[in-house]
Image 1 (cartoon, rainbow, N blue to C red):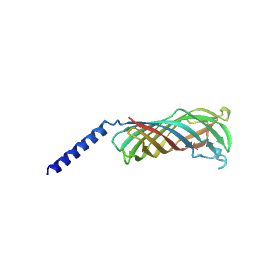
Image 2: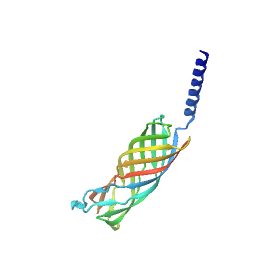
Image 3: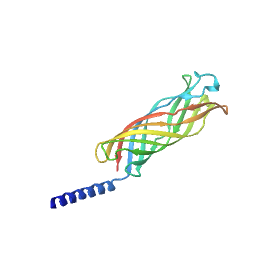
Image 4: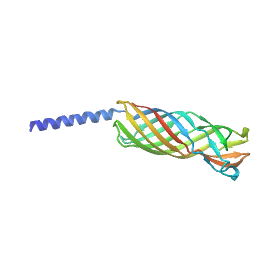
Length: 204
C-alpha cells in the first residue's frame, strides 16, 4: 500500500512539473523561410481576343518571416510578412513590364500534435495584397492597387530541441487584380500563387 501511494505521489509530482514547464513555455514563435512563389497564371483574355492573349506573372523565390502566437496548445494565429516583391509581367510570352506587391497574410492554425517532434498543422485565413510601382506597356497599363482574398495552409514542424525546429509549409493564396489600359479594364489577372517554403523556427 505504501509503495502504491509513493508511486502515485511521484506520478503526480511528475505531472505537476510537466504542467509547470508547459505553462512556462512562451506562446510566441518566429520562423524565417525561403518561399517559392508559383503563380497560377490564369487571366481573362485581353480584350476578349482569345486564350493565347493572356497575362502571366513570373515565378520567384523570396525570403519570408512569420510570427506565430499560440492561443492554446493546438490553436495558433500566424502573421506572414515579407518586403515588397517585384514580378515581371508577360502578355503571350512577351515581357510588357513589372509591378511590386506586398502580401501580408493572417491565418488561424490547428496543430495536431503540439510539442511532439513531428507536428503537422493546417490553417486558413485572409490575404491583403498591396500592388504598386506598376510599369506596364510603357506607362499605358495599370493594375488595381488592392487585392483581398482567402488563404489555405498546411505544414509540419520537425522539432530539433526545446526551442528550434525545421519547418515545411505550403500555402495557396488568392491574389487578383484588374488590368487597365487607358482607364478601361482589359483583363483580370488571377495570380493565385502556390507558395512552397522551407525554413527554421524558434519557440521562445
